[in-house]
Image 1 (cartoon, rainbow, N blue to C red):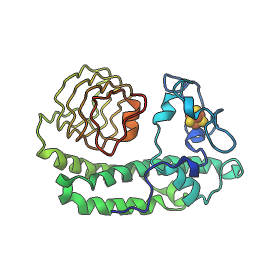
Image 2 (cartoon, protein in one colour):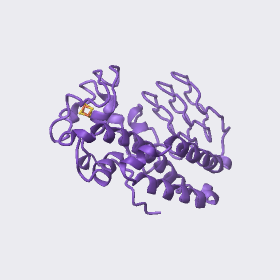
Image 3 (tube, helix red, strand yellow):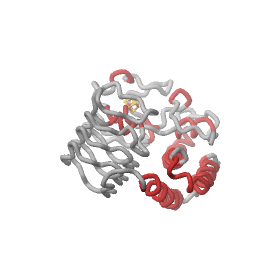
Length: 267
Ligand code: SF4
């Protein structure tokens, strides 16, 4: 499939939506509190981050791992035709709400596209392709239609299908196939764990010790890996892993990644 919708962020064609629409809570990820709809003080008039090259040092590591998956340029260009919230303040609040919805749709589209790349899930390719095309069309609608869209229902439907894809893709993989879906494993000691074929969908793995763990064929859909220790871990065959998840984790030269992902610069 060669999708028309872009699922990789291109900040050069966005009007800084993530830097204004989202709320920040002062924490290890963001140096400041910021309510939704208020521009970050580091966003300049050209919609660029003035501290882009030193985000971690300046206390904004959360910004380095946020990924709109192309929703920013879709909203800025395809949906609003290049208009922005500074020169058109009357559309600002609508634009921010559309961005939030578009990002949810892009997250689903990213996972559906990924599902189509899994040879063992090929029997489900036809419904996955149909779901992708339906969501792609919905994501290109006018703002009013997007605001009327029941995104939660779309999410439920796509997730049901993706769970079936995951089960099929992992069915014949070696390993114990443990099920930790949505589990709270924050700070868990999982060094050297055999997590081959595991269901880690939505699992909270913040600061978990996963050193030298075997995560091949594990489903890591939206698993929270912030500050997880992946040094020496094997994710070479892991499923549904996004670059942003790796960027939020720790790793080293021994960590094995799926070929399509880049080794984060801070590892
Ligand atoms: S620090 Fe930079 S990247 Fe982060 S929200 Fe502010 S302007 Fe955007």
